[in-house]
Image 1 (cartoon, rainbow, N blue to C red):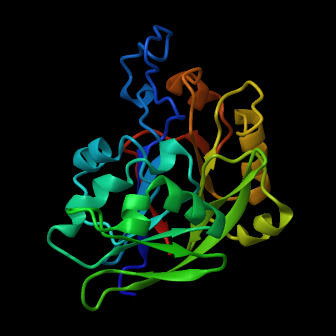
Image 2 (cartoon, rainbow, N blue to C red):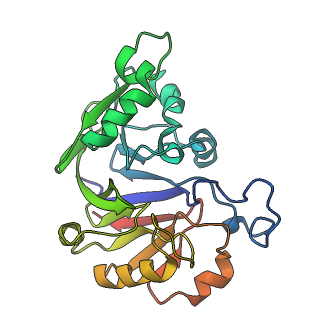
Length: 265
């Protein structure tokens, strides 16, 4: 590939409720700092002429407009929870000019649930104007290609992680890895993260949670993985960006909506 950089933008970094939380007047929910305002988690990656979206939650339309996203060649789905997939229907405008279906990659278990949740897209698909999405089951490294002629080809490695008692996927592309909604990483998956330079990792809050890493747990995992830079996401409204970010060790920072960075492929 001519372009050896992944250009990454965090579209959303908030927990399932988003931040501010409806009806809450806490310090973070009323903060004037834009970094304390968090849409639901999603990530946009560009490699050469290939554009990849990780998850499409309920805020995806607003995120795409804010980030001026004009192409999506593939979607990587981490798991089937509402805050990560309910925006799939908002991918329809990306098909108005390009009729080639957008592949949506997911684990076999997640794909089965999505067929039930979105039967009008993935099963019936005869409703006029339905999003033209192709659900692809994956359980090993695979390649993503652009939907235009002479597009680049990018290898993606699924990273199985635990979200409570549910196994879901994170993803690695080159030297970048994205692990949201994580409570533990199996040893076999730790092996798949060797050499990662930039890591996006779940870090919900300081208080214990059965389905998410706490900030201290995420910091310890970041130390074990050894990426030069880790960004914590899926942040709750108890996390005050300026104060908490200043307390984190070198090489670990809070992510925030709109954060952009590049990673060597």
